[in-house]
Amino acid sequence: MERVDREGRAVVASKVPPYRTVAYSVARRGVEGVRRRLRGRLDIIQLHWPPPVFAPLCWHVRALERLVLEGMAGAYGLSNFPAPLVEKALECSRRLEPASLQVQYSLAYRSPENRLLPLARKTGLALIAWSPLVKGALAGVARPSDPAQRRDRVFREAAGDRELQEALDEAARRTGMTRAQVALAWLVSKGALPIPGTRRPERVAEIAGAARGLPEDVVESLDRASARYLTRWGRCYRALQWIRLVPCSLQYLALRLSGGV
Image (cartoon, rainbow, N blue to C red; front, side, top):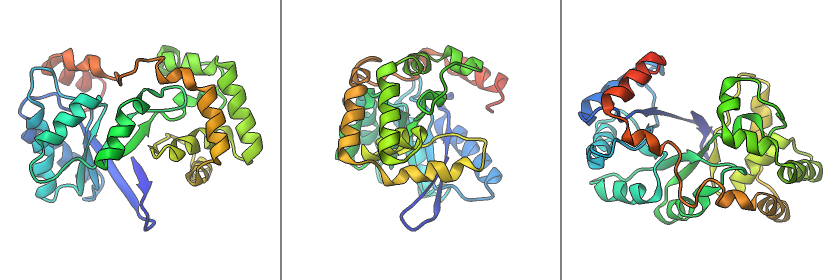
């Protein structure tokens, strides 16, 4: 993941999975692999999801903290942590607190606004939003074209939500932006950093155009059209929480078979 900081420099971030209880050695190997592929530069290293329920969270938080202190990365962050675990992770840190929190967040998945967004603002965590376009559903894709879209309940619901789609169309007309820019700019207006994916270089300029945010009245109209998504997927953030019940060995095997390690 990359974004541009206030000085115009790209910020490079990556993640390591907590699938082993020997937290430091596994995290270090993961970071070494990332740095090798990136030729040495890594600004933020994040824990991809919370560790299994039987593995002490502090082991993993302190492993990343140690790697930053050793100069392996500029900062460390969390990913897919619910509010109680974010608070626990902050208690675990000794010398350096987490710098970022990456969660699923979009107009069609607003659960983070209930607890995580206020917590991020209070503690100074940069909130990074993954799946900000819901696999294209907020950019105008009406029907699934691949297995990932077909399996995604949020995609199916957002693509078929006439009120939300019409609100996006109206916001695009009013601002002169594309639907994708509107959906991303809404997140920017909320104080989040969206990380949309694209395989087309020409779309980079379009994505960058969302950085200016939206007029307040447009944000409010989108808030109203998407209000039910504040609780549709639960009041508390739950994305990837099921994986905490999967034994470490099975997590590793699944990642190995998928080519992730």
